[in-house]
Amino acid sequence: MKPLIEIDDARRRIVLIATADVMARDMNGTLIRLAGERPERADHDYILDLRESYGDGSHDDVLRTAEAFRLCGAGARAARTCFVSLDAGFVHWARTMDFCFDNRTHHVFATLEEAHAFLDREQDESHVSAAA
Image 1 (cartoon, one colour):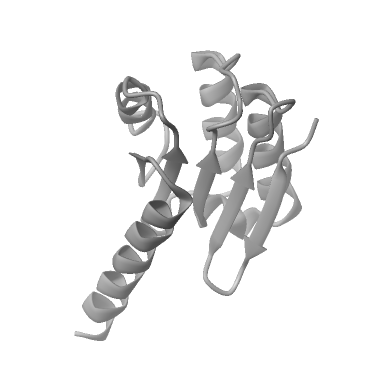
Image 2: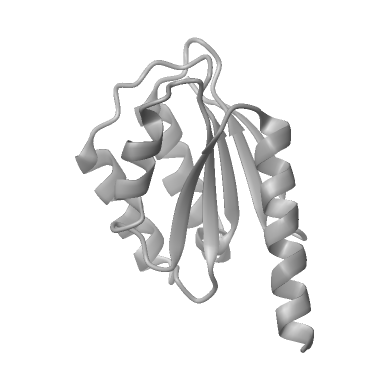
């Protein structure tokens, strides 16, 4: 199955929402496809809402996604992936992903609103830094 997808290329932000029938490997496949269609999306910020999904993803899946992003030229700009999850232990899994991707950090939030607010602040700060 495919996740719900919201793409805002102007803001360099993509949101993937997993429904109950979407598994982690479906999410990874979608990430790879989106970057393959438009390589600049490998440097977009992502929000992955996993609250209704169950985890079947593995470290190999993460490495496959990281390699696909790298082949698209990822790392030219600092990017973030925000996971929305109620799993208190997910933060540890997300932190290990920082070491798999070039110039991308991974964060965990309880709601979509928190993830969007975080990315809004990060984008505002980067615009201020670039203007200085």
